[in-house]
Length: 446
Ligand code: ADP
Image (cartoon, rainbow, N blue to C red; front, side, top):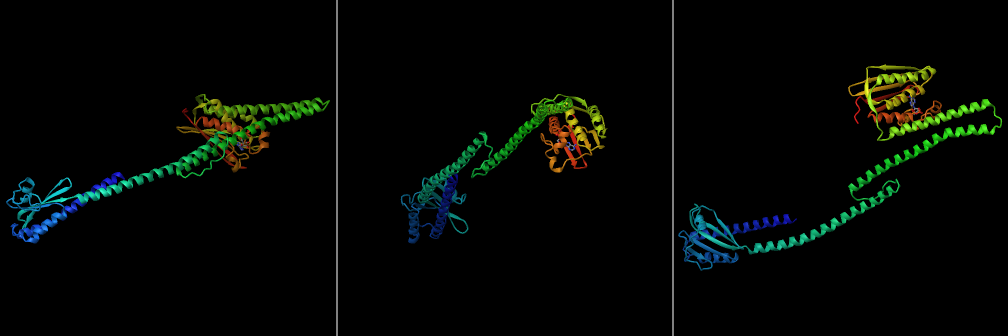
């Protein structure tokens, strides 16, 4: 505003001064014409020209000098210099036609020298008019005062507006902060505050997204804990029931003891498996879990895994075929990758039908190796496919339990693959079969 008003004042001042000078110039040239007609004989100047010159000098609160071609002052409205000679540079120049006019500013006065010339531009003298610029100065001073008042008013308004706007902002931040503090106390409720700034609204949104994610995490943590307790409790409950029924019968036959004991051993085995799986999962879950990476012949590794599974598959007449397109050496943690792939192959056998088949293939390009485990078993319904890698998730709990499943196998598989910066995908059609494809980088980059 300050800059703007300074510029405005300056240009207003220049413009009004210029206009005044133009007016003076115009009136002087009219007077000049009349003086020409009288041929500078001021004594014989008609009274009205003399009077006009005096009047104009009065109106301008200044002085008018008329100088003839001999540089003699033929008219001075102050009369003091009348008859004397006026010889100085600027007068010379205007008289010789080197300059159209000459303007000089002295304090609150402007001195303008203009030629007295006929229509053929022949110069016969000059007029020097000194005019007061006090009126323009006064107007400027008045405008400047008004502008100053406006400055103060606008500054006050700006301060008040800034105070109100920042108070609203601070109030919103304080509210937001209050609710965020609630989060650290354990309340995972979404933030609901009315804020009046888009930025704060976006911040609230981001926090709410974060809270939603935290809630999902918290839910899954709680679910995991309750699943673990449940899974660990089931075999123990079975064992207790078996032991109780033996104790209740006073002279139970030894066959019964043997049968119940066999069942109890099975339950203990199951409990051990769950615990082992959980430990493996925890190991692969940890962000800091270390990989023991070394070059491994993946063909040999898969052949070994298939050799181990074949007897189990043969029991149910399931044919297991291995197809390799090339020799693959991958930089992997042999133990973890074996675990991941054997879980997939075991599942392909476990969730297969009598007489079904399992097809395992290995391929590679310059960056990755790909393992495909395909079966024509029971398949996985579409709605379950997204949850299949979750801990303890089983499509058919009864079948899974029958086959000794804990629901942790695929979670372990996925963790192990992710640790290798790989990816796993599944395609499945219920009743048709399932295909898992695994992609793992040939070179491990930590
Ligand atoms: P489980 O120990 O129960 O086998 P997993 O995590 O290995 O646990 O598998 C989770 C569930 O995914 C299984 O219970 C099963 O319902 C389903 N599943 C896994 N692999 C297959 C497959 N090849 N065909 C059909 N269902 C499968």
